[in-house]
Image (spheres, one colour):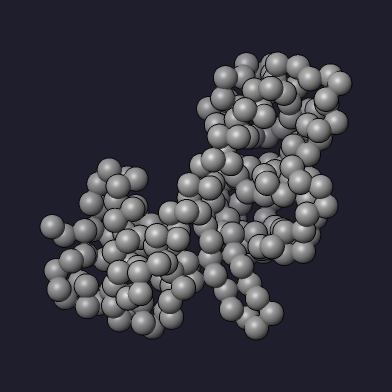
Length: 220
């Protein structure tokens, strides 16, 4: 196994677990590492999966792509983040989203669906892992509810300001990088790219922000 054991030990899903417990969990849940090139599909809407994905390096986007070619970006999952954990725990529930490689990335998959088969042989690492999965699920729900705040304003400026303000609060700084390029930000906020770029230009002219590519500074 080529991943960084320290990174795993410090990850939320293995919180409170000893190295031996982590090794046992990965073995029991049939962990496997896969590599993906930028823009490749990791999981496709309609797929069935029993495996949670942990981003070892790079990043992925969670997208909703409809039959008419419309794309909505729901979230960006950076190194150390997870995806498909809910689907992995549900039986035969098809994915409603696509998981795309936002850049070259390495993903560690492990079959958390197998936890249901351990009912008669539950041990300490299993209980710890399930508890940590609940925390991950709660954090994901918080993130998705946050996105609703970003897309609820009726104006383009309102959506941009809501998003940038939330990132500023999370970073604890008025200067930060966002995980999206211009097109991805437009897709995330449900906006046309040209309209978003135009509004960012107006906000810069009005002295509200400084922006260069994905780097922003909020002006007071």
